[in-house]
Length: 221
Image 1 (cartoon, helix red, strand yellow):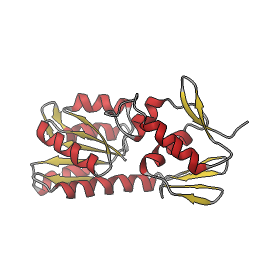
Image 2 (cartoon, helix red, strand yellow):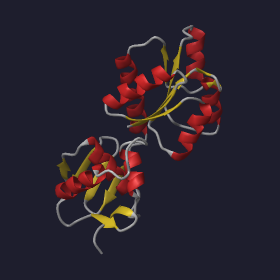
Image 3 (cartoon, rainbow, N blue to C red):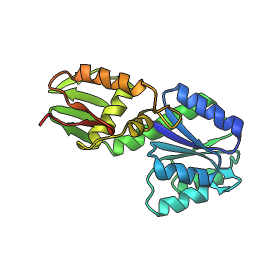
Image 4 (cartoon, helix red, strand yellow):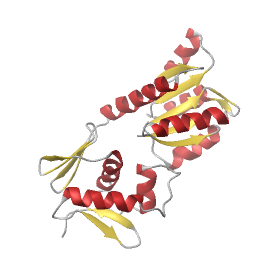
C-alpha cells in the first residue's frame, strides 16, 4: 500500500515516513500543497495523510476542491484543532478520518491501514492472464486454481504487470509502484523479485523480459 504524507513540520514528516515504512507501506512525502499536487499528478496512492493547517493553505479546503472534481482517494487529516465542529468539518468535506495531535504512532498506522483496506474493498477486481488470477480484494494470486505464496513486493509487481494487459512495464515504473520514489532503479531488487515470481509461477513462462523496456506478462504466442 502506498501513502502520501503532506506535513510541513520536518521532524514529524520524517517520523511519519519512518513509522509507515517500518510497517510495510511505501511512502512519499510533501511539505506543502503544491508538493502534494505534484506527487498526485505522477503517482497512484491508496491513501493520503494531510496536516490540516499548512503554510500554503488549509488542507481541508484543498481536499474539498479535489472531491468536487471527483477525487476518490481516502484521506486522513492530522490537526491540533480538536473541537467537535472541526472534526465534523473534516468528515463533511470527504475526509475518511481525523486524528488530533499529539497522537500515538501505532494508532495512526492502524487508521491509515484501515482507510487503505476500505478503499480497496470497494474497488476489488480480479485480473487474469492465461490461467493466472490475481484478486485485488483478497491480495491473492492463483495459477490453475492453486494459490501461490507470495511476498508483498511480489504481489505488487504481479499486480502492476497484470494490470498492463500484456504491455511492457518499465523497470522504473515497477520499482516506483512496488517500492517508492526512494528506491534506486539501478539496484537488483526488482530482478530478485522477478526471478522468484518466475519460479513460483513455473511453466509455461508468463513474465518476459523486454530488452530496453522492462517486463511484460503474457502467454507465449
